[in-house]
Length: 169
Ligand code: NI
View (cartoon, rainbow, N blue to C red):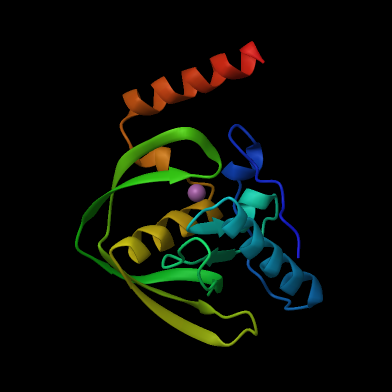
């Protein structure tokens, strides 16, 4: 297993649509394991394939992991939100959006359907933090970042700061 480099804004891969996973092979299993390793190393609660430059509809997450504790990474291929309700406001950050966090309003409960790493159909009901992470990671597969859910003013300030930092380097 390997820790992969994480793509960061303004990398265009973060703005692209990931493609449906249709073939489950050794290469895909390796990518899943590497993505989990990368998520724990970061550390982060979840990771979408776009973030490691792979345009596959694939997310990994583990919202209950504590440093040094047991790892139980979960994987969903071709995740799709089939039911949503309620509202939650949570401060989000992202491994691809450096040095920034902001409150985002999302659904408090979601049902996600997809496949596990063997291709077997699965359904996950997420509430609270899990609901937030599922929505955040599925957004990535559609080229959407959490900063797209905040005010244009806040987003503009952040993007200008990012540009300035890049110019100063
Ligand atoms: Ni993210």
